[in-house]
Structure formats: C-alpha cells, structure tokens
Length: 253
Image 1 (spheres, rainbow, N blue to C red):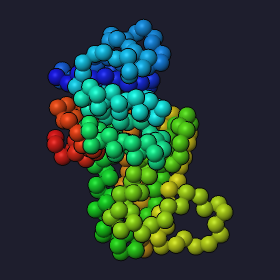
Image 2 (tube, rainbow, N blue to C red):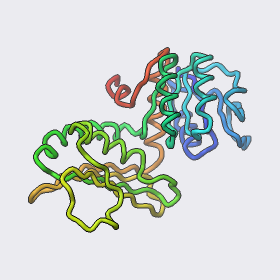
Image 3 (tube, helix red, strand yellow):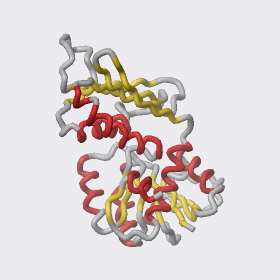
C-alpha cells in the first residue's frame, strides 16, 4: 500500500487522482494540500504542506510552482519522495529540484501519461533514421482554451527528445509569420492550437521527399495523467534519493 499526500487536491487533477485512487487497492490518499477546503474530501486537507502531520509514502504535486521550496523542504525533512507534475518552473527552481534530488527522491515529468512517455522514446529512435536522412521535423500540439502556456511542456519535451537524438543541432521555431524565407534544414517547428475542451493532442511530423511519417498521441481525459502520477508514486515508495523520470516507471513495469 502506498500512502499518498495529494498537493492541489481540490484542483481538477487533484479531484481526478482522488477518484482514481478510490478504486486502487494498492494506494490511498491520506491527506490533501489545498488553499481551498471544500469539505468534500474523505481525508484531512491542510492549507500548507508545512502544516501536514500525516505519515505518507509519497507526495503527488499538481498545484503551483509557488509551493516548490516548502514542498522540497518537507520531502527532505520527512523522508517522503515527491512526484512533481506541476509545470512552469523557473530555471532557478529547476536547479533547486536537481539539488534537492541529492537528498530526497524526486520524479519530475512534463507529462505523466504513460503513452506520451513511450512516444518520447519512439520519436527519438525515429529521428535517428528519418531526420538523419533529411526529413523535416514539425510538432503540432492542441489544447483547451483555458491553457495558459504555449507551447505545451509536452511539445517541448518531444522536441528535446528529437534534438537530443540529433546532437542538439536544431533551432526551435515557434512563429513564422515574420519570416519571409524558406525553411532551414535545422529548424524544428513547434505550433500551438488552443480551442474548446481539447484535453491534449500532440503530433510529431517527419516530412521527407514524397513521404510523411506522423507520430500522434491523443488524451481523451485527464485520467491518463492521473494514472501515470499514481504509478509514479508507487514507484517512488521506499526510495530515499535520486532524480527520476516516467521512463524509469515504464522500465520498472
């Protein structure tokens, strides 16, 4: 049994994960952290992680970058590993995460979906064949009209996977409206679409002479991210330090 503290428990993803864990015999949410306590949770809710006095095996964070320092301090002091699902960290915060991972177990991923994390590996292998043969690479991501950041963290992670496979040769191009020139071979275009209630679509396009290969992932609900986060919490249970990725969770299954 993995006892979980859900940080951001009353947000959309927190509620989704609460529902997932209710049907999981191997996991239990023992406490929640949220500035808003709606009184509907079956577990105690604290306004700050600093106030939580409930023993747990892992923390799942779907909240805000503002709580990172308190979260990492708690994780280190209580010896509770943490799954960081929040996006939008600054460069300083990313460095803080790396430093903290020397003293506590941290899993951070731009996307908790097992499918996306498998796709990260697949596009890397494809790039070694297709991009190496001169195929152009473009990424198109689509999300709901309430999403604040663009491009998505997942689109950037996919771009990074391709770029890493090719020795980091590519320049990321986010907008061509001001560029009146042919596409350069070492461009990697990333386009963002925002509309309606799209949960998340990502296409990685390898366009060559007379043929196109497209890798696609579609999320139909937030549950795919929640399931991945719970799997990650189970994976971290018992680990004392280290920096982990969802690829480690997939490899362990």
